[in-house]
Image 1 (cartoon, rainbow, N blue to C red):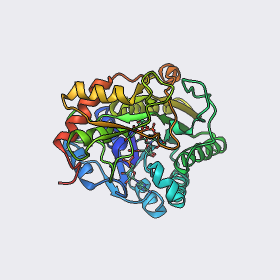
Image 2: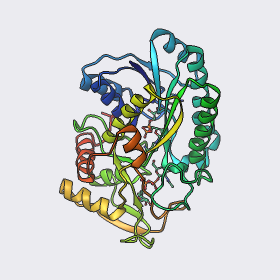
Image 3: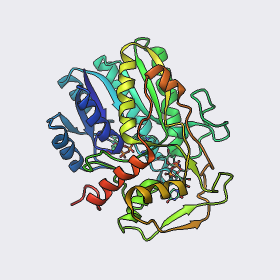
Image 4: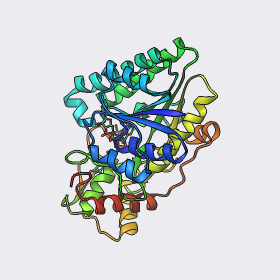
Length: 338
Ligand code: NAD
Ligand code: UD1
């Protein structure tokens, strides 16, 4: 089976490409490099020993997408391409709606023209309403998102549900990622945020490598065991396997279904710092600062549905994720830049 991966040069897309190749899938990859570099694609080809077709194209470019569907017998699309920085989405909402919503709609249009009917979408735990009970299950309330980025994911979910209601033979899977961390065990590919990292693990890793002076800990007065925020950190390699499980599901299912991809366990900011120090032997200086606006104290995934229906579970530990993040960061202190 040939799978089109949009945004395949990015963090989660690149790891998923490797897993797809390892599981025997043919891949075709597209990315416009608005948040990634061609070096990621070079490394994917070297690591996998495969010269898969790559197209530098914007998913919103209908001619480019039609060309890809014409050149390859694509059966399934995994749509990673999108913008994901929460703060930026507050400053530049039109850019977020313009990219995330339009790319999803245009991609569905191109798939319809090419009669491709399997669609796997990168959604996020951010679609859940913050006042749900823990853990978030797939039936927890969604919507009322805290920022434009979250709203684009919520709206894309609604759009895809409507598309699948109209196109009865489509199979749409919405994967709600919790907090992806870690890197490929080779240390050759990993997360490369542009500028100052927003997310915790890249901030820790850049502090460890000396690019940041200290880690700001956003709040230590939450109602959590140590007062710092608690999240469900999932190794990106586990997440990548989740996409392969979703493809298997698409083969025998039509409609639109959603799954949490998380571990089911919460880890606090200070627990992650301590796990990183233990796994790497590197001390992380940190300072307690004010809470970050819009942050929730605690959330984590219910994982039963993915386990039961997709036969998928996260397997890697936080310690492995820390060691892998560090291998990537220490061998590539400036990411993919020379
Ligand atoms: P990323 O920025 O590393 O990867 C996204 C890739 O898409 C980039 O390489 C970028 O250049 C490309 N891209 C963006 N818009 C495009 C367009 N219009 N046409 C072609 N390429 C385009 O992000 P990631 O962390 O790998 O996330 C992948 C997906 O998963 C995103 O949709 C993101 O919103 C979602 N997600 C990520 C997280 C996370 O914490 N990383 C959590 C939940 C959901
Ligand atoms: C953030 C986004 C969310 C997105 C997710 C994954 C916000 C409000 N939410 O979620 O929409 O889906 O990333 O990309 O930005 N922390 C620090 N210091 C730091 C960075 C983070 O203490 O320098 C803390 C945070 O307060 C939080 C935890 O670490 O408690 C995790 O933060 P982060 O990695 O940004 O993920 P989320 O807040 O879950």
